[in-house]
Length: 348
Length: 207
Image (cartoon, rainbow over all chains, first blue to last red; front, side, top):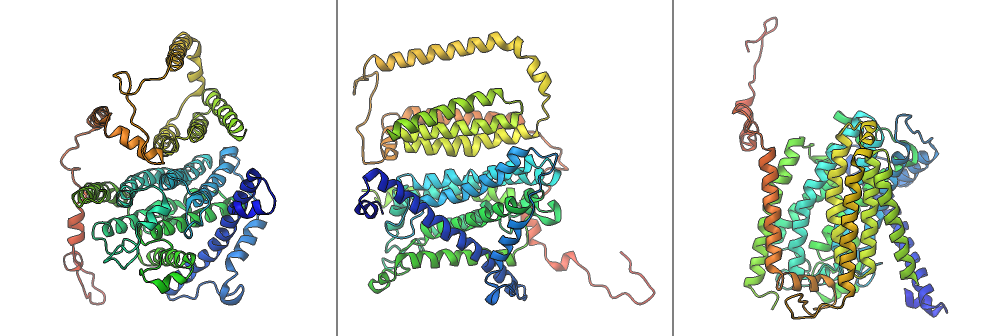
């Protein structure tokens, strides 16, 4: 895009600056729109599985429900509890929202369609996603109220637990791809299963890691069955209890942006990103971004499917799964995969 | 120009937030300022082209260490007045530590400016840069020339971890040990857990 702005007669520095800002807007606005629609999809899927209708009043098929909710929330009064620590109380939703957007900078939507094609893209995502716990911990502490505080403590313990095994799973993928760069990780998945199927679909060593990654991403984004931070039967609404108006909306937008990020990571790391499912020439005529979005929304459907069908975990079960099952398993797979790669001469 | 501007921006923010870490009255605020300082340090690392170190700084310090700091500080009920009362008493110690750090800094910068480390000598060996990214160069250096030091660091950390676990391990009495057997819970079926009763009207059931 820098080249395009340079052709309009700008100097390189200005063209780069304008192109970056344009890129940021081109990612952020469609993302916000996607979040609004995805909340609607989530509610619809959930309702259908429960044999309900779901939102169906605002707009055709209730499509505008999220925008109506947004407007309602926007017009509400922001209430700050008098016992709250005001600065941090207001900072917390901003942190959540910013962090959820910042990770999208390195996501490649198509070959070359990426805002920042950095060498350490995957590490950047890991770094940013480890920050999302701060929004929750800060809001829980600053609310100065019992339930948000419990929720914040649960969130901190939960996210640290699952980040460890996510880190090891990413090590497996990086070992196989030989790069931290997300574009190169996707390209290394071309024609992988039987030489015709793109992505690590039928890779017997990486497929179990995908299953663990999917479950860990549910835990990382605090979705059902791991939504103990917002368990309404125990903690009212968890860390969001004291929030109203736009601060509340920022939490929601950030949460769903994070879920979409995790869905796209599933796509990029294991299912071939923008590559078509089968390495067959006519399928490459379809723009890569279409495949990327289709796969991402498929994973989002899986997320809402899980939400509608699975009961919530107990807290000790959650910790047990993270530390006693996933961590040894992913650590073992790191050893097995690196051994396999060395034995087969993957790097030579 | 932009690099210089960015450097002074990160450096100024880092020093300011480091000052705020010790100046702010609320320990939770201190930890949050510390996190800001880590961030600016990561920014400085990116500026010198060490993007791998920068990302690791954020992942390890901000993502794990500072979360635990925050976790502990939030739980503690700290008496601020008592905390500040020790200021005068600990002042000489603080000055001494600051002097040691200053001396180390001067020594380090002096050694750095005394001349480059010559490759292939016992004082310092550096592998030639491999590939484009510094991840690969770092790995090539760490897993070949400095393998022993790397493994030794790992062992030291392992010993520290084992030590922490041993220190905090509490032997529980046998009544509490293994009170959750997940396999047993999963194996349970409705037949052994529930009983169907058809009580007649006006009579209860024997439990």
